[in-house]
Image 1 (cartoon, protein in one colour):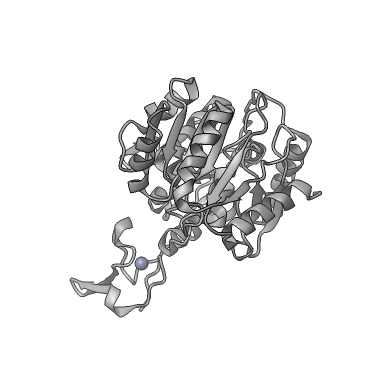
Image 2: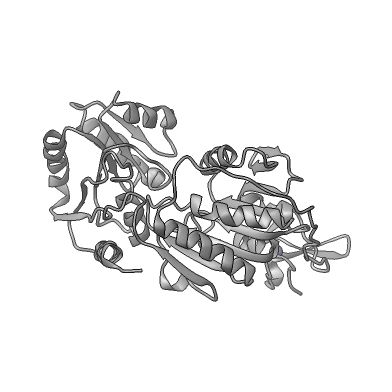
Length: 375
Ligand SMILES: [Zn+2]
């Protein structure tokens, strides 16, 4: 016996109900019986002209990847786009979305987290004004029949019976999609045609039969900031943070490994205008806005703010960088918060650590490689 959705064969996770077996492994995404068939039916929408507009012109490398994505899709190939943080990866799929919608194909753009999906919807809605778009995330279902759906990965199960011709998945290396077998099986079940996966931090194990496209320059053409490692005992790290804050006199985000560190570090930095952000703190969005507006100087955050945020002229410091929580991907994402705006395309990234971990080494090595790569 095997679950038709998540392919679970563990009999301890297959329960009996009215003489039929169902899967407990993926029960969170509504019940599936082992004799059910999960094959998306598909539905052809009428072909029509689709327009979109951008507020800026794509760079030469963005244009090239944009065209290549359309070509891969026409040739029924899956694509993987490694696009460094701040390279403008969302806009490079717009031409492909336009092409697929014009063919009458059903399209989905999905992203792991709820906060990110709302922002993504705003950006796409702004560019595709005249397209009917559905938006689905936990607690929100809007226009679910639309040809073009924007949703979280968690909501993909709603589309297993209909499926998509094209699925664009952003931040595929992020929690909770990364390493979640059930979500990944659901993703595969929904994909009737081809997919495009986007990320800033692919590693070798993520690449299968897809065509790999690399965008290693930021849209403004400047290098990615290379983190500076300062090896120092844990007890001295707060002292160094004080010195850096006095020296820079700029907006700073300090990343700490655990929620319990947030309030501790906020307290130790109380001579600055500082706020804490984590999944356990309140007013996170307001505090982030306050940093953007210059109403506060410093945010102390867990890795909650590792991706999806842009603050003009921000510097970052990693506190207790030796902690396992700061793996290579996380450090690359954190470094990617700096220099995103053309007005301030560069800045400081400091990693304070009591030892030189392999994650730190790998992160610095990868960023240097991307900066010198010719593609
Ligand atoms: Zn299952």
